[in-house]
Length: 205
Ligand SMILES: [Fe+2]
Image 1 (cartoon, protein in one colour):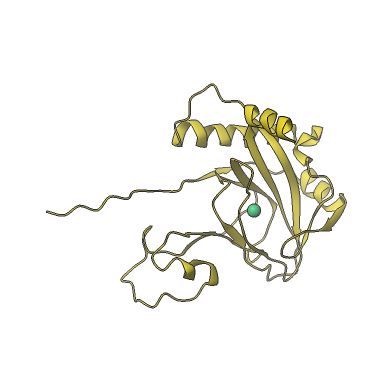
Image 2 (cartoon, rainbow, N blue to C red):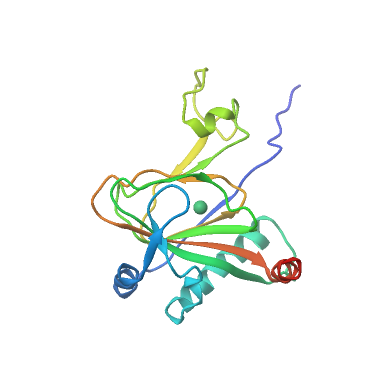
């Protein structure tokens, strides 16, 4: 008798929020600067969720983090989470984001404020997949698979929709495919830490 054990697994939490037309208009009007990796622009304000306008959304973001932490990772209730950084990302035609993760954070995520089909799917990379180095380069594996599963797939693609909120461990590598239409794509990214860790960070700095 043989047995296969899925020794590790990676959760991706998906929620859905309502995005008002006011908010869509607001993100069009704020100030942007070029991002430091890949291309596209991000808001000059890197604590966008602290604004009064984002009060409800910030609560939803923290709720989703608690859902992931307590409901999936089974962390005890005594941890309080805080948003350490948050910004709006704007992708125009052809803009994309190279593979990266959010080092220095515990949970991260993205809320799609305004996106159309073809605006750029998010791709999660399985660095432990069979033939792991292929995961980054999108090169076909040198084996034919009957079908893909969580052991052999090099990446998992999510086609974003306006209002979709994705939350995941900050260590999970991801990238964004190019925006292939002329409509600007707006998303809100965030990093979350336990309050206790923010204090530690302040002490170290
Ligand atoms: Fe990211």
